[in-house]
Length: 251
Image (cartoon, rainbow, N blue to C red; front, side, top):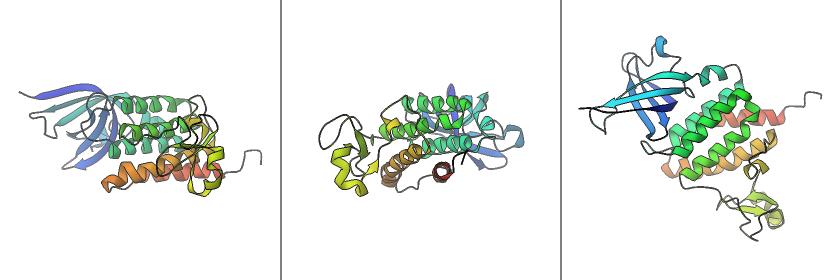
């Protein structure tokens, strides 16, 4: 008797294994981050299916629950291929998948993280620059799922809920402009889009958002387990910084 499940999934990572096989990691709503052995997964015939960011219908089978098991899938949405022509879209997709693959615990359901990643992938079709703010929100969601959520509801010093401009790098709590003024060199800027779900922000705000969530990812989500932040995340930060430094089109 075998154990099996079928579910919509996002491909997170692929590692070659043996003769043409691969160990593929996916994220599902009910089964969390889950790996399985894909026969022929590293072959040219299956190369397009197992690209990080693709939405698939996954099927996992094993004889025992604690085994690696076998994974197969059918392509639902080729997000990776669609992102190939836009460097920022590919950077966003690669970083989101790498963060989910390395930060989320194995076989532990995190439905909000799954929904956030699927939403991010779906919105990429509308243009990467419209999704950059959502990407930072996704990182904040991952922090919250891991128990390191930012507290941006009110000022940690005065209790006011308006005019919040910075975040304490020690506590993750917001600070108002007045309370932050004497300590600006010690605080992290808080981009407005993290408190306004309708705001898209701009390149400078995205860069500030990545510095903010990056601090807590490095210290808590990864540092607590003595693991490095994924390289894909650094590449994304560099690309966003480049956008911020680029002169306007009409310059």
